[in-house]
Length: 305
Image 1 (cartoon, rainbow, N blue to C red):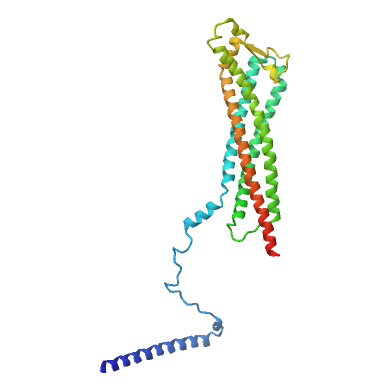
Image 2 (cartoon, rainbow, N blue to C red; image 1 turned 30 degrees about the vertical axis):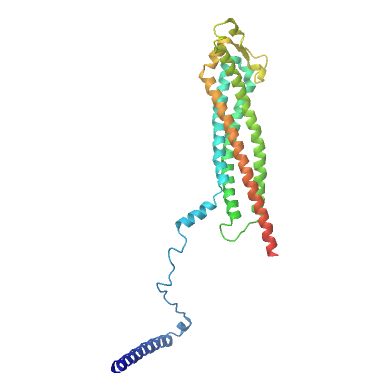
């Protein structure tokens, strides 16, 4: 019985001490409010305990942020941009050097009179300037399409909160769709046009291979194997000599200008084909994004009403 009575007495003593502490704290707070009346409206926020603090593992970390950022990357537009830059660079760079080599071959072997190929020289010089313009335009257009791809992909996947789009944004996306279709059709023509010099140089190269073959090499019929460049329409019919035969034609095929121009025209044609493929990818990506944006904008309008 005695220990129980001592325990009860100790508990009463502790409770009385706590009441004194609480009453003392209340007195201090009341005194503070009496001295500073404007502080009565002040709200005291409790200090968060260790258990109330947010767990660092529950907050999104670097990995989750990276995954979210990678989800907004327009991979189709990115691949198309890389392919477009590569194709345009190959077409413009190789085409420019190959055109200069073609003029040198014509002046040295097929048209010794400058007035006969004056028009062709002017056309080739104009095409070289056009190549500069094409390279500059597609560099800017590729960057704009990539930026537009980032915008539409983020809007379609709703990565940045609530879905928001404007009529101006949809109009710009539709304009890019139309412009990409027009450029795709135009580059189909460029791709077909770039195959013409490849065909011409291939005919000359195959004729030289016939001359080098054992069946015709060293025979009198070698001098009867000729190539007439005038039949392609690049120089007039009165151009002299216009036609090269036999060993003279073989010497032309062995020159560095012919070898470089032939292979550069092949690479330029391949670059034009790569650009066509890039524009086709752009067409599909921009058309899909525009269709989804238009559908979601209509759905958003319907939910408002």
